[in-house]
Image (cartoon, rainbow, N blue to C red; front, top):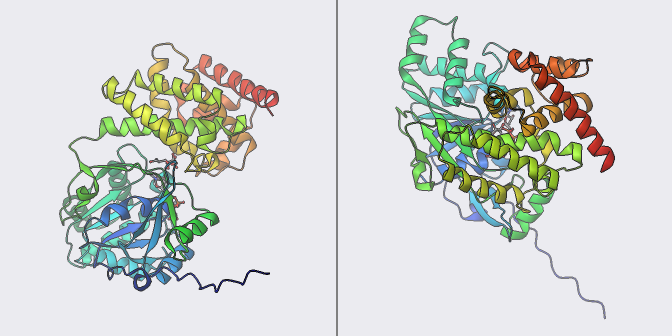
Length: 442
Ligand SMILES: NC(=O)c1ccc[n+]([C@@H]2O[C@H](COP(=O)([O-])OP(=O)(O)OC[C@H]3O[C@@H](n4cnc5c(N)ncnc54)[C@H](O)[C@@H]3O)[C@@H](O)[C@H]2O)c1
Ligand SMILES: O=P(O)(O)OC[C@@H](O)[C@@H](O)[C@H](O)[C@H](O)CO
């Protein structure tokens, strides 16, 4: 006998009403660069303080804010370790807007209720000058100008991108962009705008179509904007919040006096290893971080990178041992499929902060550290063979494809290293070595 068809009820769309969520909190924080990471990190910390709601803006994307608006700002966070994912409905985004909604942006930044602006605009976002049409820095400057005119209440700017001294980098970018402005506004910027330094950490890959299917299975809601992330999360901040801030510490954020040692640990050990794997992994046939750290050659290179970086790091050796062990577990997790080619974007902005400080320290001791050379050689292959997404792509691809490509590419990021013949030869030899490895392990 045929089994009768079960009566299927449609999965309800995720909204505040269907999920029984609280009404949106009043907007007191603005975010620029609404993507996966903001939703897995800052928005989750802000949930710990129900008095604070976020108005979140993308840079250009209009689709994500449309989906989030249809869901009253709600979305599912899937936290994936090695077992069944845990889910959480995040409700701190009160409004979502496309970056092109300029009137709303200016009104939000001028609002006396708004006390802070967080940013995830990628490393490249800090490069573009404020006067470049529609640049992130230009938008921030326009917002601050409007705030100054509207009464000039103080505000904190909180960059959450993986850059050394991200608060200072943002302050310099805003100051430079404001050079032609009137002195009243420039003085207000100095006195009333605080630039907070942060170290942010939570591995959050780009969302895939399957993630929505899993979210529906786990929560019973149809969610068009889910995010997948890992269990680990860290947020360290140093700076002033002159108009107040959410109680982010309730969710584990830490406010510290000096970030330098933590920043070095994060950028060298986590992001440096990611950068190394992003450029060597694809050359050895690996697509994701977890695959790469299971490849014996890449696993050995990663350990060797950490040994090399540890020789020059400021934190005590025992802290670094713990950190490395935990990193290896995070990188190996099968719950997170973190694509190497996604991490490979923007090498010209990342290599100088993550690989070169260690390389310079090693060269000053006449050592040729294999993992740093491997990262540079892998980057060269990437520039020669792949479609390159980098703010300096045109220039770098042309340099990489020239006869003495290694020297030329190095000269674009550090002229002293480009004059180091032993290093240039080692990078060239490593390119041959990687290409030979691919041929031997197709
Ligand atoms: N994803 C992570 O694991 C992670 C962890 C720590 C820090 N971060 C930081 O967050 C950033 C964003 O990561 P994500 O996962 O949200 O990426 P995403 O691709 O989901 O979103 C990126 C956001 O940045 C905007 N953007 C892109 N180019 C820009 C530019 N030139 N100027 C201004 N804005 C720009 C995009 O429009 C989008 O809103 C990263 O670049 C990194 O600095 C990410
Ligand atoms: O574009 P990047 O290199 O800044 O980021 C890619 C990953 O290395 C990064 O997003 C890490 O997952 C993150 O920094 C973990 O906290």
